[in-house]
Length: 158
Image 1 (cartoon, rainbow, N blue to C red):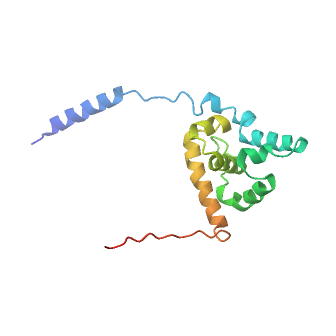
Image 2 (spheres, rainbow, N blue to C red):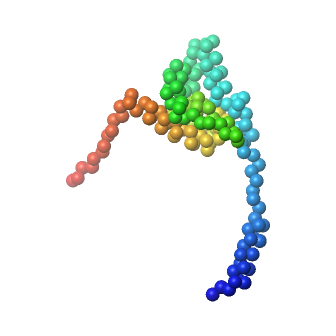
Image 3 (tube, rainbow, N blue to C red):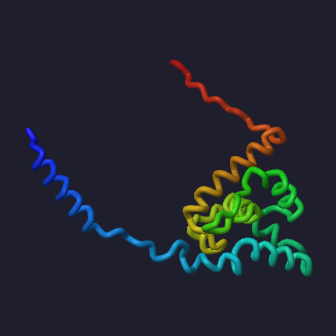
């Protein structure tokens, strides 16, 4: 079958070929357009909408997510423990308020993840994880307050 020399030659060839493949280095961890989240992200957007509402008719925040500031704060206080993430030594976590704001904007408008990414300065990959997680937290928290009709469709056997 295979003698020791052939096995050694195959192993040496594998090591040489494997060593020649280049490891791709990431150019950046975060896209440059998304790095400005601290200055132009969802938290600042929410703060400016609330500030505008204090000086005007008070409908900017409501028009943005279809919810009053009071209801937003109440919902946030209920689900915060379920959606809050901790900062790591590599990067800061997305704040729970921002996570809820992204989800409510998605539910209110049906915006694509791409447009939410540009608006909130959060990657599409993160948004695709945030929205289901926050929706599950909302469902778990409010399931006793909302009755859902469970319609079971039966087929007629004719």
